[in-house]
Image 1 (tube, rainbow, N blue to C red):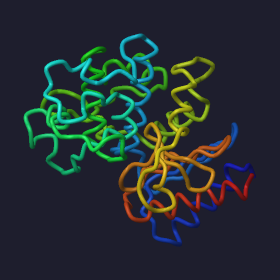
Image 2 (tube, rainbow, N blue to C red):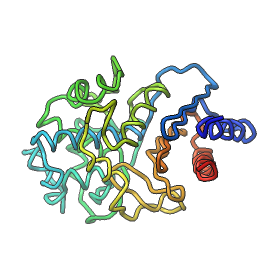
Image 3 (cartoon, helix red, strand yellow):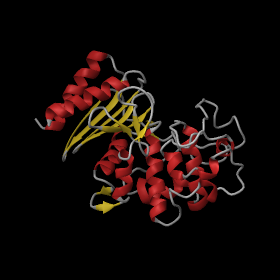
Length: 289
């Protein structure tokens, strides 16, 4: 039995004994893979894992010379009203949730204002402090779109098509922009391809899709974030933990967990059980190493 199979079997046992509402599991350790399904592998919203895709888009655009993550975002959105302190907010601040602008999530946030990005930048900043908000990623992608055109279309030849992910239907705001911080439906197996690209630092089947530095910045130069053992550190879309691992973490239990040569992909519908299953996955990977 391979290490991937051992890890898969232990996670399956834990899911079934704990009652965690998992949909799919994909385990890759080195070159070995193992999978398990509880439901059909249909496309589901990966929620905040989409923030990681937005970081890849920004990195690609920076390498194309279209943007800089360290230029004020107002450079790309001229004419937007800026709240106090927002003249210094950059794409990096928006993608690392350190703009200091407070705009809480709500189910209607895309329709509560004529333009969510304008509303976000109109509000005052509290300085370079952590403030998690889907509106932050949305605003970053609005700025990116001003330079590269539609971000979803921009990613088709650069990311989705090379990964073999066809006909991606990213949810749109009333302005026609991608929702950005969520709304990206992928199958578990498709999500695992994104995980492999990230584990291999931007290389897919021998072809570099994104510079390794952008992958590294997803889990380095951590900033202080929230409370709780696996919510204390945040980088460019990546959360530190559990333990030595790091992860992309979407609501309701969508997880890409990275540890050394392993990546565990989980899709689910269990918001409150996700932290425990992530911790168990990392513990299992550690024991199997």
